[in-house]
Length: 71
Image 1 (spheres, rainbow, N blue to C red):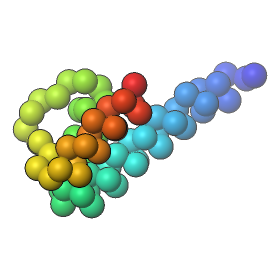
Image 2 (image 1 turned 120 degrees about the vertical axis):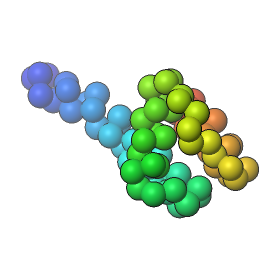
Image 3 (image 1 turned 90 degrees about the horizontal axis):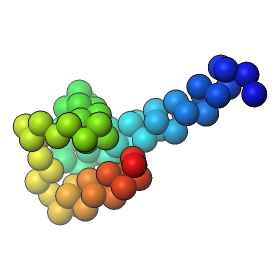
């Protein structure tokens, strides 16, 4: 397997998870696209600044599922 294909195998799922999380939080929490993206990356990286917190039950449950999928 060539280097580019190997990198794509790693990056494709990561990009998919980031896109899915961004879309999920945008629609469920009603956040802007940039806030949804920011929360997704901060949650996946385990930094967790705490300035954005899901307020809905669906958002809270979705976040816990998202964390496990992102691991």
